[in-house]
Length: 482
Image: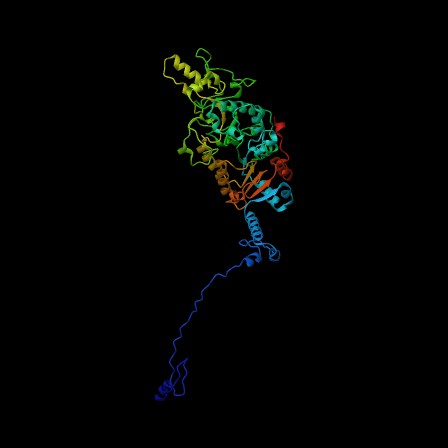
């Protein structure tokens, strides 16, 4: 028994070794040492940047051998140019019509998007009506400016000035404006819809159009069968929303009563009546309907608190006015200027009835007849209504926005495009396409617009129709429908 115990005592512990003196060595404490190294970002030389392969975060390749021959200024200019081109590739892709035809990949994507989509939104500007013969007022050589230069007037005005609210600041400019608008209206009556108008109508006939928003006041969309009547209570009743009003209507700035042109002017363009007398036929019988705010696309007074946060708060940024005309009442009623300010027959009738009954009445309560359009510098009276219903259109989740014939200069329209673009790009396959003769700013729109086809709008629409006969081939033309 004792021998067994001794043998166990003499056994070597597992995992230990004895030295020569039969002593078990002490275990050394091992500590792990971690070497801390300072990580420094390697300096990237200009040469390495230029020689680096083209990546999303790198500049385009610039051959060093060729750049050596350039002086410092030339090299800097070349790098800036390439950097700009690189930025352009990340934003709007510009193509002319020929390039669009030849670039099969881009053409295929756009055609496929138009073909499959049943939720197309469209925004149009003056460029779609130029081929119809309606003049352009932005360019110095436009027909508006030519017409104004032909007139023998003391005040020289440009085409754009004719659509500014400042025309109501003097009687002379009011007279010029009235004559000019009458001639423009007569010219519009002779115009026919363009191919772009027909393109929009065909999309609507195929139930692919959510809404067309137009900055134009000519109403040519109505001539090809699209519904342009604006109804505050039923937004869906309109195919086209005329953002800046309708040239085909006249309206009183005070009582908001609506008139047709032939109710105010005769065939020669002369005003049909002077101030209505109390014993004559009541002027309330003149006009096209009820006293309805829905018929008014401009406002006598501005209300910044109600509309300043809306995307349609202004048509322009030039100035604002508390009334349509800021002039002395005596000057307003001067016999020499009766042809300048066209008095509202309904207001005149109410004024003279009160006068006859001995009631208090003010001549300043008599309104002025003017076109039912929004001028630059005016507050839009339906800004809140437009903004509310635009949100309803956005909730329909449009997947493509086609922009025709506009350079996107008006602030309210800019906001519309930005808002629509953000909604469309929530869908990876959503697209925003601009078709216009003049390229727009890359820096301002690179986050919103995918493609710009620098082309005539009608030529682009003709090409799309030829590529998609299943949509545009078997639709009855507007001439046949009429």
